[in-house]
Image 1: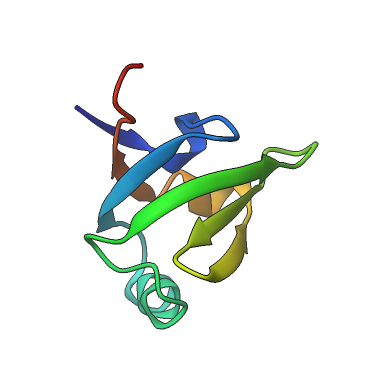
Image 2: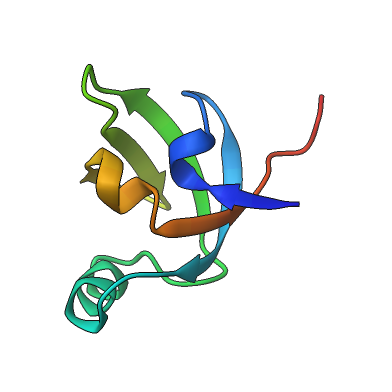
Length: 78
């Protein structure tokens, strides 16, 4: 099952499946290492809905709008 990264909670692990949005914005996210197939882990959520995401050894902060553009596989149920 897929969902948006904005639906994930801190501590959730998921896999990025697709980057939506305008081409320049999607290209910038790809340049930051957010490419389909990348394993992601939500590190923290900000007060306004932004997320700090771990992608390998990198940490990337995305605002709530951008988080809705990142389609991920739902984390496996524990």
